Amino acid sequence: MSVTEITVSRMIAAPPERVFDVWMDPESPGGPWFGSERTILNPFVDGLFYQSVLHAGRSWHHYGRFTEIDRPHSLQHTWVSEATKGLESIVTVTFQPRGATTEVTLRQTGIPDDELGRRHKEGWGAVLSNLADRFAPSKSTEHPS
Image: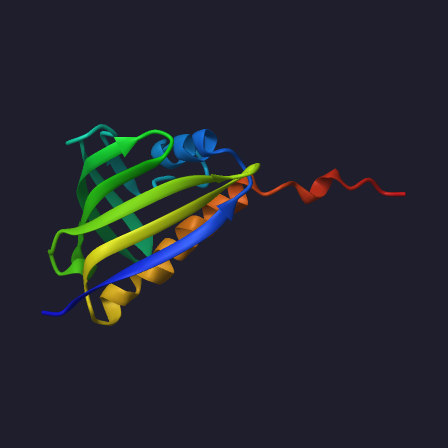
């Protein structure tokens, strides 16, 4: 089976420490674990995770193990799901300071080079967009005249 990789990035309006902490906290809105049907998260090296996400009318189950955590710079974990056909892929997330913002880049390697595998790009793009929205400046600060 042929495998591929995907990369997605977003600029987040917060410093790396704040963005990293939201990423790792399943109770923080905007983070990748927030709003799941069920999450078990042990955020330390060799810690396991399980996540069940409701999407398109069904549950999608994800499993993995953290292999690297370097707050607030990067993290890496394995990723196994139905969409990886049971293959263990690798997800690497970096948090690079860019002035008052953070560039978050997610790279996933070892996913099947098929429609379901390539959909990871769309899924991770949505995760990063939710994270960006979490830190977006509020538009409600405008005052009526």
